[in-house]
Image: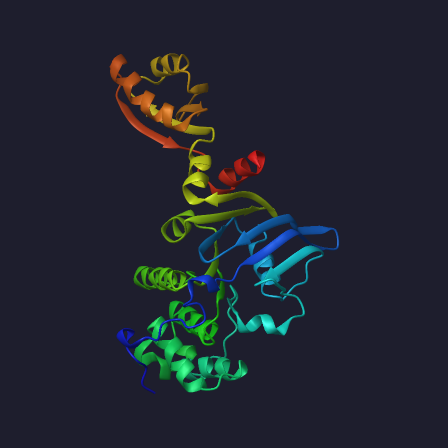
Length: 324
């Protein structure tokens, strides 16, 4: 089977009209399993463009995506796709594509067979043409006639994206789409999502990696422990993360002398001298990082290490929850 090259790709047809953008809306949505609350009173709107759903593992991102896709009903609240409820509404799948985090692909099929089967399930008038277009978009090349069982994880991911795109949906939901991809494949996927967003699609992807969201999305929804901890422009979210109180581990040629001087700085709220160096609690990230070098230089102290010691995503997200 011959797949067209990237120069022959068919542009998205479902959303070429700039006014045709479809939104996904959640209003006071909760989802619980017995006594366990997975999603807690989330209200948000996702519109045309690329939006990142950021949060640590187990935060509730997958549950949220599955409610948007109509796989789960909200225990409370409403979930709308293009103004229509997603739960028990098969018509929503004509405008929605989903790539789940968990793989479920029959390895005995080729990518061509797998994507064509998806086209036939959508009852497309020309499933062969739709499959060719979708496979060309993800650039699997000659591998489309190989069995999926021979694919790398990144190749399998691209085949799954092709199956989700085969009916040219206006809304694309992707759960951790970059898992298993090498750097070149990641860059290609990011470029693909940007191009589709530019054509008017509404794209929401989940990730627990801050750098993925930074490179791909200008709008971020931060989910922590089932709650919407922060929402808005990426630069705003980044400032919240950066300007939070930080703890630094500092090594120098004169730790005790440096500790005494740092305690006089407005940006420092505490200093502890330990076996591994100074633990410095800074209440203003930017002010402290500018001040510490000046202070050391003025005192004739040589800095050998200045490293944030609390940069785990869990710490960052916990801070955001406290601010929400």
